[in-house]
Length: 336
Image 1: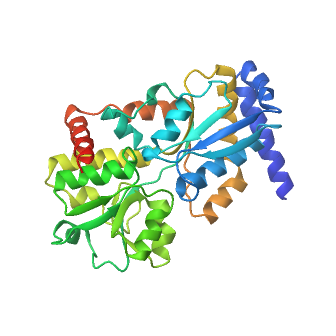
Image 2: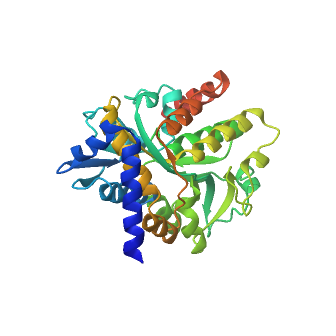
Image 3: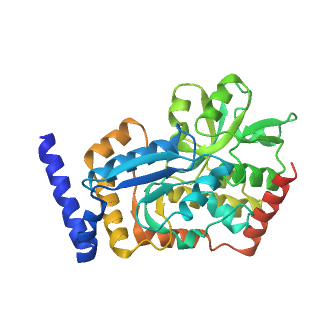
């Protein structure tokens, strides 16, 4: 039965490659005997690494003769890995994944940005993964209102400047004047380990990265940015009455809609890009990948190619008021 399923998926992949045009079909053979580097802009472990390795493994399956090598390039809130990806040779042999929080970084014109997300060669996104506020179970904080009224500073973990949760925690703290002390430099699952040690109180991150952590009794969710789940209060409800916070929550919510991205540098030839997109689609629709994702409790809700490019353009189309909030947030972050 398993062999029948695999054969069927392989046949579907071949049809997709053929459907992208004669050049793309021919250029699938371009990858035969080639090594493809898949950059993950975080340390090993954590959600980005997990998704990146799944994508790399199954794209290799649908580009026969290719070898995918995952290269972790953590640092500076995904800026190091993303800058390296953007500057890579546009031959289809370097792909990567990074935090959608770089939308914030580009909007704020952060000095570390050496890329333009609108010019990336977009391959796909793997999930819709809402952001959430999570705190350690041993923390006395039981609700969002207790965060806002705490008399003591609350240590929140973030990645380096430029990472999604760095920007999100910083902007929420600034706008709502929260008693939060940011501790940066946490990558992969460092924040979860720090919560268990009692070093930090909480953070903001993708829900899928913390579902098991919470299920194991190590943490609790206080609020969620978007998503269809009903078990956690919506941050949109928790900040009602504060127009600036409401705009920020809408922007953070949009990030969850385009989670777990895969892109290549600008200028990848149409033939290679078509083959990569077809292989990515086949990977995302592979029943074995989907089963593994379910076991890992990682959602798979893909979007492909130009649809992702349009979603990125929409995310970067923000009002001057929101952009100013981000600029001020980064400025205050540098002053901490």
